[in-house]
Structures are given as C-alpha cells and as structure tokens.
Image (tube, rainbow, N blue to C red; front, side, top):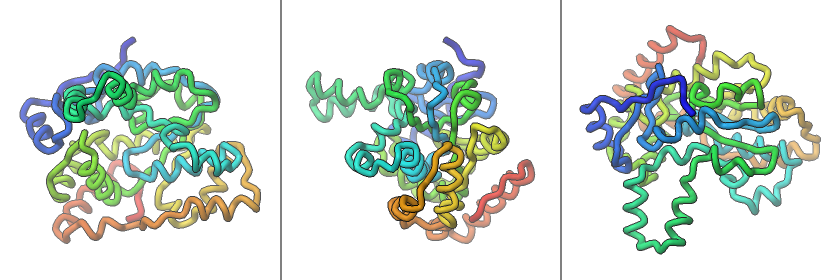
Amino acid sequence: MSVPFEINDVPEELNKELLAAFTGEREGFLHVGPKKYLLASAYRNQAAGFYNMEVRPDDLWIVTFPRSGTTWTQEMMWLINNNFDYEKALNTNLMARFPFIDLSTITCEAFKREIIKKNEMDQKGEEEYRGRYLPGYNTVKDMKSPRHLKSHLPLSLLSPKLLDTCKVVYVARNPKDVAVSLFYQNRLLRDIGFEKDFDAFWDLFQRDLVLWAPFWSHVEEAWEKRSHPNLFFLFYEEMKKDLQGVVHRMAEFLNKEVPDKEMDKLVDHLSIESKIGGWRKEFSPELNAKADEWIREHEKFTDLRFEM
C-alpha cells in the first residue's frame, strides 16, 4: 500500500528544536503532504494504513484538530445514535465505544521501551501496554457496526472514500482556546512531554510546529467541504451558546429523533463548565496582539471566522 503524498523528516535544526521542546518524542518529527502537517515519527509506518483504511457506510466519524471539543461531541453523537443508553455509556469507557484510531501515531518506540523497562513489565504486562498503541485501522476491523471512530488526522490523510461513504462530524474551535487547552494537555502527556511555558508553546503553535498542525489548514480542509451532505461542520462555540439547538441539528444529520422527554436529560448530561474565551488568562497583552495579527493574516485567505 502507498500514499499519494510525501512524508519527509523535518529539517535537522528544526528537529533539534522540536525534540528539545517535546521531550516524549525520541526519534524525530515528520512533515506530511503539501501542507506539511507535523506528525511524530510513529506515523511514518502507519500512514498507508490510515489512508487505505476500509470504511463502512454505517460508520460514524468525528474528525477534529485536538482540543476542539472532541470528547464532548463524541458523547453527544454516541448517545443520539444509541437510543440514549446512559447505562452503557456510564459502564463502558468512551475509548471503547468511540476509539481514537490514530492514538498510535503519538508514541515512539523508544518511549515505549523506556516505560516497559522502568515499570519492569513482564511479557503479559508488555503485551497489554503495547496493545493500547496498536493502529486503529487494524484494531477496529472486527468492531461491530455501526462503528463510532475518532481521528485527529486532517481529511486529506484519511481515506479518500471517507466522505462519500459515511457520515463525518468535524468540530472546530477558536485557535486561542485550542492552544491553551493543548498546552496543558501536552504538558500532562509524558509521551509528548512539553515542559516550557505558554509563550513558548504559542510560538510553536503559530509556526505550525505542534502535532497535527497547521491548525488553519486542518480546519479549512473541512470548512471547504462543509456543503457535502455527509459532513456536519460544527463550531465548539455553537455548542456552548445553544446546546439544545446543536443536539437537534446533530440528530437530524444522523437521521435520528430526540424525543422531548430525552432532550432535557441529554442537555443536562452534556453540560460542561468550560467557557468561551478562557484563553484570556494565559495571553499577555503583547502575546494577544501577536496572536490577533496572526489570525488576521490567515483570515485574508478564507471566509472562516471564529468567535473569540
């Protein structure tokens, strides 16, 4: 199997900078495709598997740039598509109900070996640990239909048959809130291991040097296809402002109904505390001015607009 796009190592000096910033990666970073999506070394041997992955007509996908409201939307989609089975949702991990198929692209082999050695895992322990990082294009082959699948890969790196075959929800969120949320996640996840401050993270984010960036290219790929009947393009900010309205639209997209007796329960279940504009706590006036200029520059080339 092959892919119709190039996969290249990032330039040597840039790779040194990124390895110093993201300490969980041991082997290096990649630029993928004409838009130079930044991915970790593990992606190289998995690219063809994701691009040539078999998709089913009754698959339901969510595709997002990270930290855009993915988990929130997954829960909504799954419950609407599974007759509001809250008991199963409570007793079954979301990762099992709605697998993150490209989780395997984050963690390099060297990091896995370090964890296995550090924790003195026996053969069974190692097999269980490695099992968490098997590529989703293999692990979901035997998954019962309808499958619910999550990916952070941009549409151009997924199956070219995806949109014409199954329903896809794409969620977008304003880049400032995305960057703040991604900053804290990248500090928390050891296999990414970002250890610098937010100003340093924003610099990398703005330079398209965080995993799955460029942010704008990722979102615009879906935005340009928003009229496709199998794509539901959704803003995080819409859900915060009118969750009930989004539930109605989501149900219509999924060819499902939300009975009146279920609506209040579902909206209450999905209620979260996060706010639009949480970025204000992290951005200094100087950094905010820099970010605004970056956003204005990108807005010159698209009609995509975010609520900040």
